[in-house]
Amino acid sequence: MSQPFLQHCPVCHGAYPKESGEVLDKKAGANLLHLTCGKCRQTVLVLVVKTSFGLSSVGMLTDLSFADGLRLQHRGEVSEEELLAFHQLLKTNQFNFKNNL
Image 1: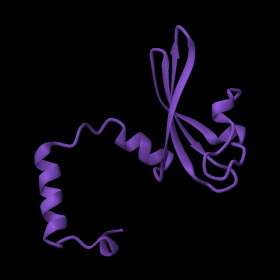
Image 2 (image 1 turned 45 degrees about the vertical axis):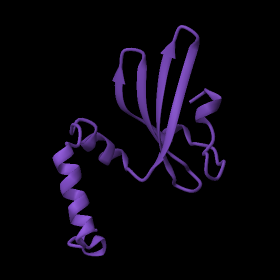
Image 3 (image 1 turned 120 degrees about the vertical axis):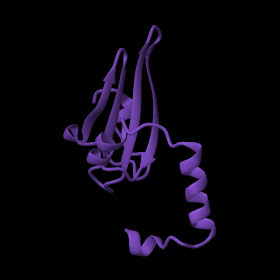
């Protein structure tokens, strides 16, 4: 974790412990990392790509655990039918989030 863009949490600016980074996926020239802040426990997904100009990264705050990331990364896309069915479920108030957590 020697790159400056991976050293500090974007939420509390706490330092990431060396053991906080876990690799979710590796492909040619790219790594998907899951980081957990040692101070506030906020998690971040970071895509680090090696280009001819050096390293480039983009990160996203998330509530996914590392295990969630492993489980969901190869799930596939959400279909239009699934999206519309979920929209209808929410629209008709047939889904209670509190009872399904």
